[in-house]
Amino acid sequence: MEFIQAFILGIVQGVTEFLPISSTAHLLIVTKVFGWKELGSKDFVDAIQFGSVIAILGYFWSLVFSIVKGGIEAVKDKDWQREEWKILVGIVVGTMPALIFGFLLKDVLPESALIIAIMSVIMAILLALAEKIGTRKRGFDSLQIRDGILVGLGQTLALIPGVSRSGSTLTTALFLGLERDTAAKFSFLLGFPTLTVATLYKSLKIFKLFQDQQLPDNIVGLLVVGIISTFIFSYLSIAFLIKYLATKNTLIFVWYRLAFGSVILLAIAAGWKG
Image 1 (cartoon, helix red, strand yellow):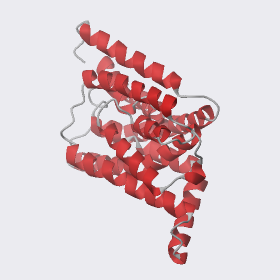
Image 2 (cartoon, one colour; image 1 turned 90 degrees about the vertical axis):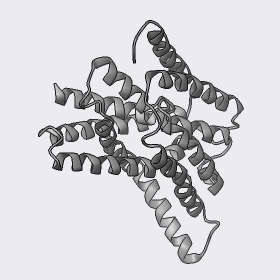
Image 3 (cartoon, rainbow, N blue to C red; image 1 turned 90 degrees about the horizontal axis):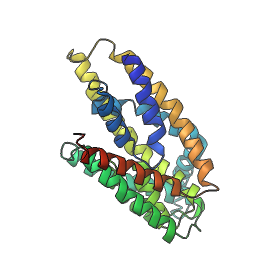
């Protein structure tokens, strides 16, 4: 049963990490509903995010390589107006707020069903406004350092359970006038360093717990199953969202978030403890 649970949690993590609907929210609700206490621990679900990290790198490998290569060449040529340099600096600078606030608030922000429900509804409204107000006229070649800073600040909202890293960055990017598929790509690239650091931090924590014999003997196998499952469904989720946003709007996610948050609120009102 534990291996089945690990595989299912990988599916939930993989599908919801990159769709603007909050992976943390769905993992928390799923583990609470089914009572999966051990594998539902934040350390485990954060560690299997490594599959999502690999999926981003695999899907965007050529783009990541060209950005890094262009950034290095820009330094050599002192060409600070080069497109790749601006994108690279924007990603680096935009990552800092989430890492700093994430470290400072890692043990402060509570993870409750009520907060998840409220933030799901609030982010649905903000995403709808971004769709309404955003001009969607800027492509990937128009990205500037300030876009990285502003989208990075938007990413810090994802520290609140129910907000969604993908949702907060995508919403901010749309407010800045980026095309939907460009907003999604930049959202993934900007989230990559933050996701990587957070995953490594949790993985080291799990490794220490394993050394201290505070974890079950089969934890390595469970992590492997969870990571593989996460990778497969993360890759499929990225491919789907990029293709979907090339021709369609984000309103389906707005309605989903409203429904998701409303169902949780109704369940709480009916007596569910969350």
